[in-house]
Image 1 (tube, rainbow, N blue to C red):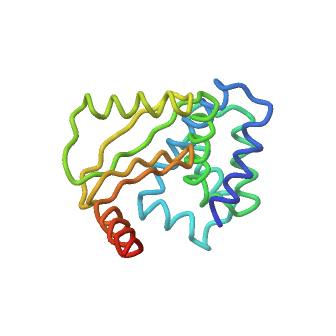
Image 2 (cartoon, one colour; image 1 turned 60 degrees about the vertical axis):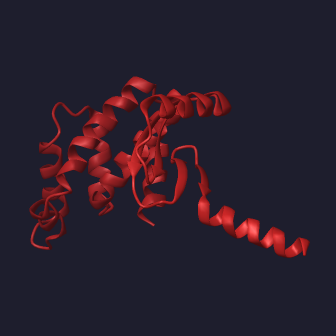
Length: 176
């Protein structure tokens, strides 16, 4: 639910702005969203003893040189009691910037370490396929196969040994 609301706020933030101003807003919101990892910070924001105006001032004090539009945006979030969705807004704003730049970040899940040249070749092939700039990172886990997940594009491609084995058995059974 939070991410749906965040998407609407981000759409309003992005409309009518150039890439540089959106990137600046994103940078400032990322600074604030880091504070949400602190339990003390979250307890301040969720406290009923502190009114929304004071919470808004507290968040604005964390931002260096906030322009008027960002200041008004934070005040609007405070008025609507939605200061707690700032991390989701920051994440969604980064996704929108990636779309504006046609550059995306993805993850390769596998159970073995892949060489950098192999990862580069995968990046190159997917970049050509989707006509974007792509940067892939590797996550070595217990996935028995290989899975490429490009979140901003909504692409997930996987090859699993278990799935191949199951499909092969089903195919043989159907043939018999």
